[in-house]
Image (cartoon, rainbow, N blue to C red):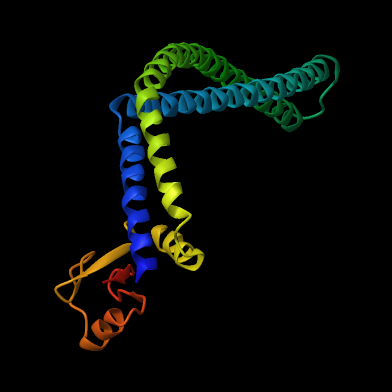
Length: 233
């Protein structure tokens, strides 16, 4: 039974250390710091996305500009043909004029798309500058919060280190097999060890069968079927 008492003593100090660590994590300054960090990461992601969008639009604009040049060359060829060739029938004239009209429509559509891309690019440039400014301001706030948090948590970290040291001293007295099981259970539920109290698991208040109670009283290590904790007497 002494080995279980060593385990219980270790858990007591280990839980105190966890409580201090959780208090540090729940610090309002830390929460503001994490919120500022997440905002900066979000602005960086948005900035990169805008940059990629602008790059894609510039590429698209270049492609369309090349297409416009080709369409204008084609239009020039058609106009030269219309001016210099003796077209035999009205149908040939009509077909040529129709082709000229389609070519001009294509050029107008391309030019309209280029205009739209230019406007979107300008808009994205302004948005990019705004996002960059927001990120810069957030970084200043983050740096100040970080300094405040480090100062605030300095004493708490000293307290945590001292408590962890006390827990480690008791950990050396715990049976290695018990300690391994303790750490495994702790990953899922904390605290991982519960006392047997009035025939119940003190962790979840579940009443235990008489056969299980007898095993525990005889020194067996039993895990609660409801919460999974190790139950000691």
